[in-house]
Image 1 (cartoon, rainbow, N blue to C red):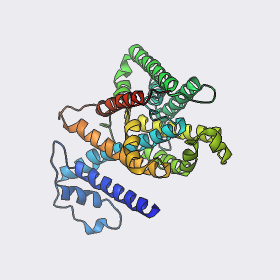
Image 2 (cartoon, rainbow, N blue to C red):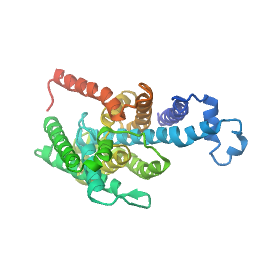
Image 3 (cartoon, rainbow, N blue to C red):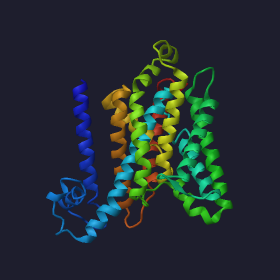
Image 4 (cartoon, rainbow, N blue to C red):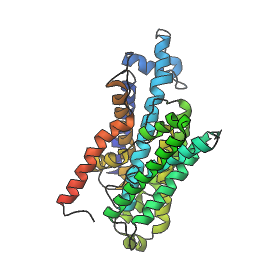
Length: 347
């Protein structure tokens, strides 16, 4: 079974790469698929000397390398980060509706970033900007508040979790609106955070999210077995050697870091962490050792599709990508509520 899992994962990653190359040909300027492959391969060390791009238009080179592919790669990293975080949130809370957006983590990150934009200088050190730090602090504080508000007798009931998340979400959004009203010269930058967009993608932004993406997802997989044991119940997990509280705090901080890194380069993009783990779980099953890797790939595919829709469906006008993901996610969220209601209600 492990061999088939590895083969299926490799096939999924290869399909993702092919799909990313394919969508790089779509846009106002049509670029042949073969040219897109040549352009990208020409930047890979060792094998680039076997590729000749001299007959490809310079404008096509610039479009692929500096406009479309950075945007596609950034979308894939954001989608993978949010989907993996959603899988972990759902495992920690033992709740299928836990999601960075629903729980207010994304709003917390956006508020933290907005405060830095308005009140502090935006500087970078070792590739990490103060905006990212502000987003991370906001994300961690918001999830800790929601977690403590919803915790009753050592448990986190679904109703209180959702209500706490929605309440914090609205509260933080209202603060962001207030900051916008009082600082009109920064409105455009703050709106960027509240609507979600990857239109300003660049290779430097990819570097910002790439390091936390790799480190956090490796740690997620390392803790996957503990997440499986948490699903059996905290008492059972404790008896099997899991330090429950420590594990939950570490996973919540890592999830918040991953979400903050994604939100810091794109703004609020909702529901990716909700719908992708559900869809992937149907194929991979509930085992987090399989679920998390496939959620990363699935989230990447979902975000690349959403971004392609946002930039092409009413071109040259661009729809914020957060709007596109919400159009998929909001109906699915309602479906989950109705499903839980038909199963006897949420508790």
